Image (cartoon, rainbow, N blue to C red; front, top):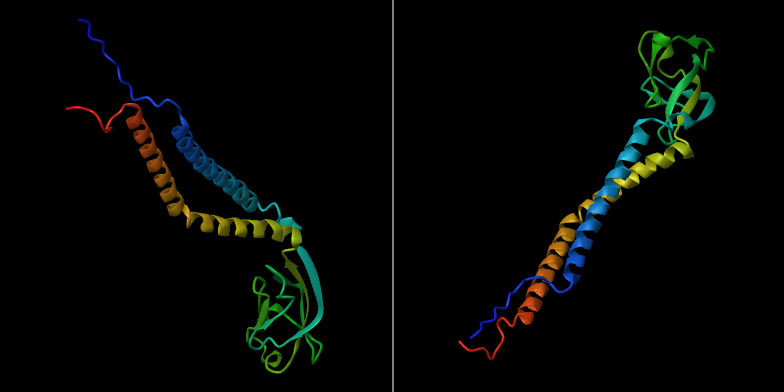
Length: 197
């Protein structure tokens, strides 16, 4: 009497389920790599100040300000503006005399001038005259700055969705594994009816 042994192997007949899992993992990994490379490129370009020389400027001639309580000068409505007083000359509009720099403080980043309190006659109702140059971010400089801002906003939006993406990925993997198990159970006749004990 000869006994035949059947060797059972738990090997899927095709690899459809593996393609879904591999594709999902590869897609997420590829997305992460692309985001990291893009971040590195944008941050490197921005940190290198390659666009700093592309600033635009405009002049404001004979601007009148009252610096007793602090006043804005130049064109402060321009994007990322800094202001300088041309030739460091400020004059008293009423009397016409030049006001030396010991009588005021300039804040070029804020484009403001304020009376320092050295010569009292320059304070109060006397108006000061200023010729200034305003340097600001022109179209060419704003483009990469806006890109960096948009990239940061986009990353924040995507990163808030990562838990949902991972949950969907886990569900797909779980359903794929269950599908493979169910198919293999059918192929091996496990759990079928009609079997005898």
